[in-house]
Length: 335
Image (tube, rainbow, N blue to C red):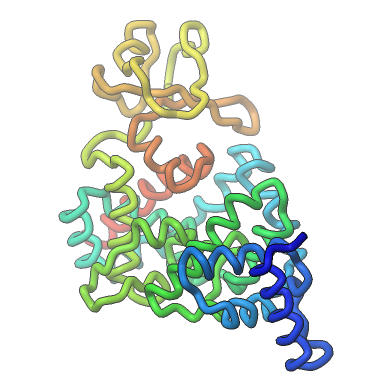
């Protein structure tokens, strides 16, 4: 038997459909999970029921989103193919130009949060090509589709949908027109709603956290994200193994979080890296697939921090290598 509130929500949805006329019903009109979700948002967060009924009546199920989320590049491409997506002259040059145009903001963010400007720029470059592609999907469509039509991660995306509605109310974001990625990530840095609420900062001090249009907030928020996840300024991110056989004595890391093994332990076994790492630096061992043979890297805490932005080690390595290429290009323009 339906709860009284849920039944009321369904009646509200039906009434809204009748008023709107035939052909105006949304894809989630008869979804029982949506009715329950609306009840929860009304009870827990004091949203107006009729506004949420109207919002979800206008939401659309996107089959292309369900297809896209089932084949992310991080899971379908080996490193040597994945790398080519991001380590391109246009993205490197665009990063150097973005750095030049926003040097003051980047320096201020680096000073306040202790995060390398090159990493901040690389994140924005990987995520949205410096803001040129922040997403074309309505966030309400993306999150509703994944929350109610994608069972493998419905719990996660239902939570993100809740966070999005709260964010929209807090930051005066139009919840029916805001756009983002197929997974509901928003702005230059592609923050999912929970990350937006937790880590976005009003770096411009204008009273609002705007990750779509305000470059102060965009740069400051990426820096704050890394700061809050433990970035250590001045510490190496990773180094490629140049000689020696790491697999003879060490295992590939599962989660890339450095433990007790240090770079000096590898050196003692005849393993060298380029560049050399401090002997007392905790490291993890990473294997990447090249076209002809695998390559091995020692990665530190800062590399692990990058994986807090995106769990894929391929993503983290792409960000790191792009950051170094952007740094070189920027320094050449500054000479």
